[in-house]
Image 1 (cartoon, helix red, strand yellow):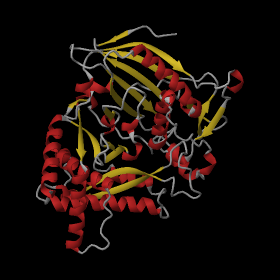
Image 2: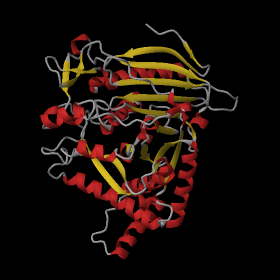
Image 3: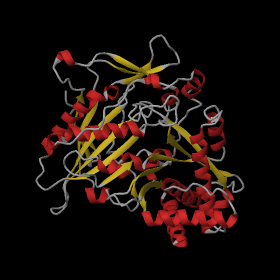
Image 4: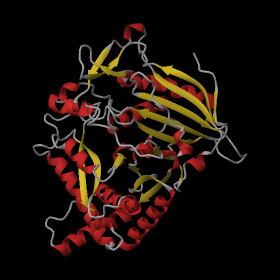
Length: 463
């Protein structure tokens, strides 16, 4: 039954919440049966982390039939859930176990699909790159329902406030990270979008691989990761008082960073030089600028700064995990450098070289997967948190989030709203296919002003 309309501060009105079940292609005889997927140690790592909240902002054509668009989104979601049925289920303790969890689906399980209206800001205002209040976008993503749900969707119609303003649609998607990683969740999003455009002849992505037997589980690591105290997710206070802004590093700027790192390595006689890819260049520069902007929040200038991110292990596991494996298959990367390297007295080139070298070394360490790689994880988290929460990342340019088209155009903007709650940065491919990388940063107003200045100084100093 539809929920009654509610008023949220006169700006966001929830009209109804539907419950979308996976479709049956051939009637009752083809309905999905009860089934469960065990959580591996790679999934258990995320049990106590906050969910990932993505927001897609779309511009709707004049005269667009909004009711039909919303209905079509729900119908195509049902078809996509047919292949991604665990997302309609829930996480629970495995029967008879006290320390093992599973993704459990049974007939009748559904995804909460909320329909709302918002008259507080238009699509142009919400999709801008300049700093704006996190509060303006935070309510456009749904919370996960109680009871172990792993997916929730909210479609919010952005109402016209001026006669010439375009109507927009905000599509918020919240996913529990213990259910799947970013590669799997965006695989689902592309499948959903293809289902919505099936009439146009779009070829859907390959179906997901649900077989968990390709991950050789490790009880010792699983139990360590599943412990709540060991895996308390990062948290950043004062979320609603923060600003969110988008910064784009163009392909030419990324090349300037790579050239600077290679040149400094040659000057220092570093052989071989750090492997400075576009993502390493992005991470290094953003980490450096973030540290400089927030350095006043940490008085231990003689200590070390830490940066945590993940890398996909599907091609690195033994046996190799299928590319379309559904679940978590990412491993941690730890970068650290002396805080003094980020001081204002350090040259731009020195700072960029130190940061990018640390990121490149962390990638190499994770790629080689040396003995003790997973076992050292908890102690390294403790070390990284010693002087405050480490900087971290959500998203990837490989996920192609700007290709998620449900039939009414590609997104004007994609945000990972949950980074405001963790202090992380979000990363995606730049819009328009220019080869650049787009980064979302959330900071208090004063820190955001310093970040903008430092980033401009770094780019100017390398060109």
